[in-house]
Length: 366
Image (cartoon, rainbow, N blue to C red; front, side, top):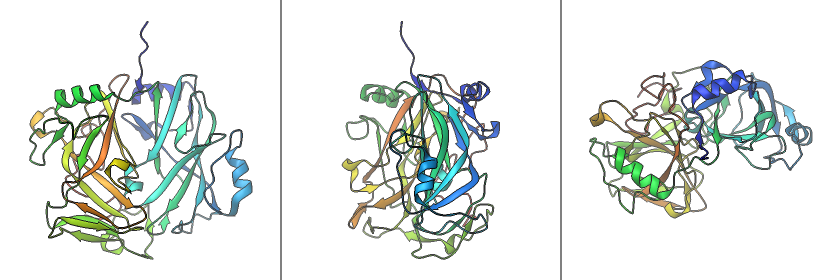
């Protein structure tokens, strides 16, 4: 008998909530193939980043490494590490595992969030059958963040088996749906360069006078997550189109850029951007790279596709990024069944059909 494997859609996640597999979550936190996780009022400033050992609880780490308990009337400070208990906990059945990642809004303000679980010696990964609490390690990297209990900084996805497509399945899906489009909505043919163990996308350094944003060095402005009209100039500086088509990435700097192609995630798939692909260079291309089913998808085939926004940071030395250079790898996953609602068209989605390097939802439009 053939066993079906794949990512679990929102309607099944809702049933898991009802069965007691996911505790403390809410219906309004459901997304097409994920669920948002929310922070509680229990937070600690830590001496540094900790990873639990097998059989070690996060509570043991809190007792070992806390400097002080965080007061919510004060911002999370830049380059300071915090452990925050999440409102959700899990009691997963055998055969169901989970992963977590930053939400797009957190990634675009360089607020790093990594999931931790009792006795699990790795970030953002929950083994099948896990029962216990969930925590998030939070690290603001560019400017102070005035966060509030109830904020949703990361999201969780659930799987039965390995949902990732093979190289052949990526090629078939690419050719069937025309996964990559030009900015003018023309299909891009598959090739050995753009389709393999994932879909390769390139960086856009030539569309418009402003091709991205760079976080301001040593900004003392505080971003309040309950305000949605912050002035972008207080936190970011625009990156102008380079005359020679080259952008020099500086170590420690944080950039928001966009891809030169539009991409589609059909209803029966989800997409994960590989955070670090050494074949593309010594830099990280995102801190929040999950794309729900329905990303860039409409019934009108001629209007499908949306660019991917990149949160870029280089390692060690200056890195010269050139227009049209391969910059990220998009790995597709099959859904067990399509979700009952799609990203963008049927949900109130902040970044559906984005057209360039958009800033996070907390900033007023420029």
